[in-house]
Length: 367
Image (cartoon, rainbow, N blue to C red):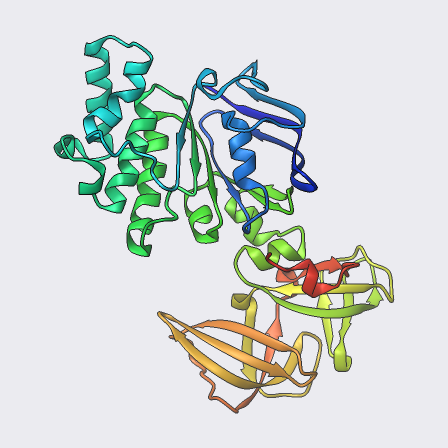
């Protein structure tokens, strides 16, 4: 079974650096997602692994084989495209058996594999249908069956659900993961959809501007974002600008605009150093109005939105910073628009970052 390694891989298109010295390891039978905004290099990275493009620098291994320079047909990978890429003049059966026939497999083996794959994607009864006779979701599953029928152990998926409507996309993401795990495959899946990546991945690789920003499990990326960009791109965060007012061996005090003070558990700072504070909306608690104190910041409710079982409060603090809080709808205390209140912060759930040279807005910008 294959693992995949990229070592210092770079790809340029003229003056544009699409992939910038990327090193990455995908373990055998792991479901890995390359996640990032448009133009971050994730699809180019996938194409480099598939052999649809060649790196300017670096090496690519599939298993123990150095595949840099090998054509796609010699890499033994299955590629699933966003636009399905089915042959329109072939019915589903002929599309599915195309790979085995090109490889000159025995007819009995070809039929057995094709029937198994069509059964797995729940299209066995539609094998006589042509692509235009299938729904978008069916066409995507047909593309998956065709990729799997060629006997690959490494599946590469380029925005495979991007052309589907939201409901079908949600259903198919679980089907994809089930198939990959049931068949014992290694999968590398490109998407710009954070929720999609969080629900299907063993590991997520977040890319930005051609480089890897952070790699980890969905839980690691959400609970321990290493940069302000990750804190903003994975989920949602409130950001505050401040400076270290006091540093000790146990905690630090951050002073925000207007003299508001926040105690944080982070101790790796010097007094006077500029920092960024990030807090998830679900970690912003609401309390009745009271004077400002450590981690107790007075404000005013500006807007309330109902989102399923959640109330989303948009709050303006006394220092004019904007804050968003998500509170379960069954919470005992509710607030009204225009009501004075205060937000409280849990020191253990606050992330602190060095103030970025380019400024906060540029540091969290999603291109």
